[in-house]
Image (cartoon, rainbow, N blue to C red; front, top):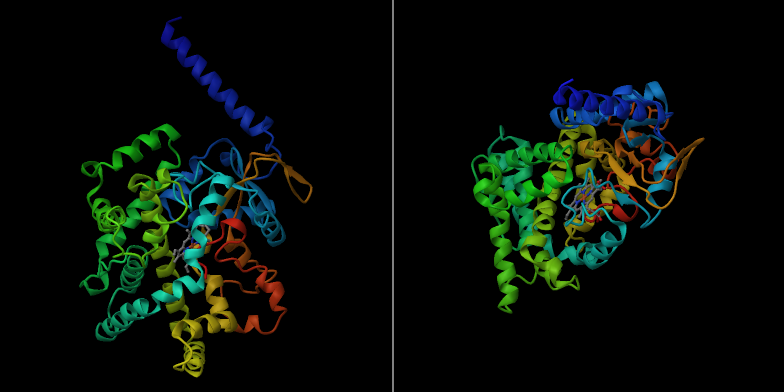
Length: 430
Ligand code: HEM
């Protein structure tokens, strides 16, 4: 027998034995779910990467067939139960993020290790409190006024691009003290928004490559000649003003002292964490994630309010009633957000809630009903699964603010987690 035949036979046998182990003998072998997902992450690549949003739909469909716990990867389960979600995520500081999904662990969002994350979060969280961010009110309203003016002039504007332009301008002004003025461009900076989509697709693909390949690509992409053109434009638009802030700190200038980045660079993070290289993912990640999350929420709001003009009128009236020189627009919005059922409904329906949250409990097994999920397993949950729970929200996909008036609101609120909960909940929530 030739040496190549031996090698091929051995490779096929070891692959087969691995598949047999994963499907029949792995500690998760008894967890129900489609067999293809028990032996490979490739179906996730297909549903997550090629058809954005399809993974959530598939997961809901599998839950309706197999029950509240399903296996969605060789070492990943997905649990769909509000009580479990609340208990699991509230174990403050006890969960890691899954390094297979959260690459580039130098940004707050993607740091996987719970201790490292806790240290970073403590250093940053006071920059995001309502008191700290209230100083940006005038700046945000200023850009918003301009956007409203443009939308009144142009009735056929692409709202997805318009909202993205506003949130990108605002995030850059708050974070970097610089306004890229996408709101003033004829196409609202369409290329920038497309670049984000390229980036999101590329990122999903990266999660399926071995860690060392991802590190190599990450290094290579820092060299601007290797960056895809659209992506390079966005990275430059963000990093050039960021570098000015690094320089200003070195020169002892107070020019950008109101920007969040300036404050982070003055915080008690150690020097190695504050170099431009170490901060790049934090800066780019925060600005792009903030931009997308805000724009998508605004789109959801517009969609449902234009379909439900009565609710839209009520909301407008409510805002007008509370508006006064003493109440800043942000105070009014905060009040209305908390108290108005239509706002709560809109938070429930926004599409960002479809992203699943893969976590690992490294120190102990996790119990769910009669199941014991071994430590080290990736346990995923998805806010949208709670938001769409038909036993709690009848006709869950409908926008019906009145449902927040006629039942025990506290019970409903346990099923409303658009910003996630626990130690990894959204820093921008308030
Ligand atoms: C309506 C808008 C927003 C929504 C719905 C939203 C939602 C979320 C969710 C669900 C998470 C958890 C994700 C995960 O664990 O995988 C998260 C994390 C995060 N969000 Fe937001 N977000 C919004 C706006 C923002 C803004 C404006 C900022 C920045 C100013 C921001 C900064 C962050 C950061 C830094 C994290 C990571 C927190 C950590 O791991 O400690 N978000 N967000």
